[in-house]
Image (tube, rainbow over all chains, first blue to last red; front, side):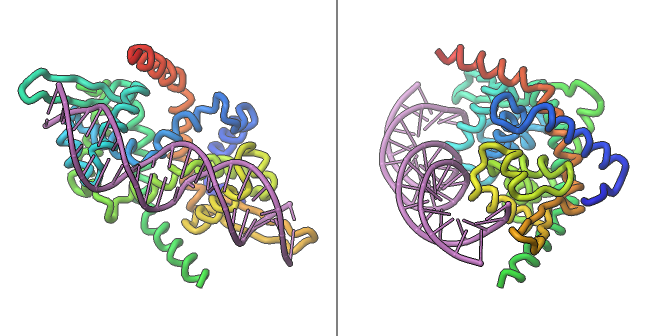
Length: 139
Length: 139
DNA sequence: CTGAATCCAGCCCGATACTG
DNA sequence: CAGTATCGGGCTGGATTCAG
């Protein structure tokens, strides 16, 4: 990365650079920290992806993400709802059903998110290889 | 998000959907969890962005991200290096200098990352508003 | 079925002090 | 300047139990 491999990359770097110069990475009013930090919690991203296909019931989500605890499922969904990314609708049936769906805002997040997922798939092997190499040298 | 707002969105949803059907979100071999979880730690993303502009010395990074502790800076950089995203070069000067830079792999992550940052900037206000609304109703 | 409440382990990460 | 070592607090998140 001494020299960007493509013009697009160079332009991207410039954009980042000027953005950094203007905003600084301090906590206050830094969108990155306010938004991306949230995707950091263990489950938000997974749930957003799980909801990409349309509305889902609580139990369905539970089964879609096999190893989430019901506590974390509830909590993460509430956080996402609080940020306006998902919407919650209760059906007063018996027993009651609750359906979660992406809001318009949440839907708009899918595109950048898909970029990341694509990248992750494409370079997953590279990363695992790099890790193995690093650990081998450490020994 | 009952009905995708654009054809592009619909296509995106479909892509996600078929991807989920094929891979499932189980931990094993799920690129999302292996990669995105790393962006979850408090500093990785910030450091990648800070390195977007070119190689940076340890102390420079420390000053670029004002509130990182030196411990976390060292540790996060090592993790990124382990994953093959950044490279470390030592100059045997006096006193010694260490330069960190994005690897080709790390550079390729910049593009999807920029997508997220752009989204974050664009919708930062919406999210803060949604939060305020949610908290108001809770009371 | 959905969710709240409680208890508790583990780790993330910050503060501090110490080496080459 | 760059990095390590140690300690400790706070938060994340899992298991379990209870409720609507």
